[in-house]
Image 1 (cartoon, helix red, strand yellow):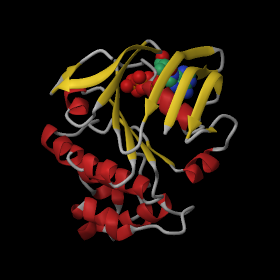
Image 2 (image 1 turned 180 degrees about the vertical axis):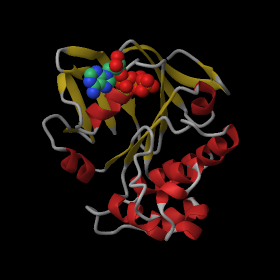
Image 3 (image 1 turned 90 degrees about the horizontal axis):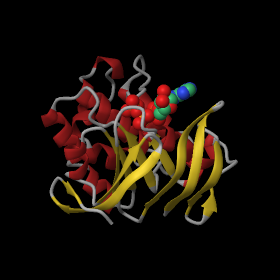
Length: 222
Ligand code: ATP
């Protein structure tokens, strides 16, 4: 579904990603882990068109993502749940969710609320007044409103208690099974490998290791 090959990207004169290869298949959950500054966020930004790529290829269902606008990439079926959630904190939960689906004709609020029931009781609440866990649910739900075929989630666990992280992670297999593949960026490797079938380790902008999860919390080399 998503195929990244020999990708190089960066900011201005600073190159951050070097010859990165990565793939995400249908209904798959793939983790991208690595230390601070490794380039995980930059890779997601390259896929969603926020960061321009230098060399290499980025394909989604056989169509190149290079030189497309962010809006066109959303229309192709890719959603990006950014690090730090970036909700419109002064708007209601309902308004945040509607904004996630504004380019899509057939949004399915009911399905999204089934996945995250706590949001159902908070639709008219201002998003910034919710707990961190509820805000993360809202950010993921907003991403799902465009009915994406691929959703990229950056640092799902950031600032959240482990129990809340587990509660949100438990929803991901259902999301993947219903047709939205997930590329999950995490610094918490255990959390990521509790749901991902495959993982990539990024170190200083290069893929240092890629493999299938062969046992719980153990990353085997492909
Ligand atoms: P973190 O978990 O800390 O977010 P990361 O693996 O997601 O780490 P990136 O955020 O992609 O890493 O950052 C990779 C490198 O790119 C870092 O050296 C960072 O300082 C640099 N960088 C990130 N954003 C910018 C920017 N807008 N302009 C210049 N350099 C940037």
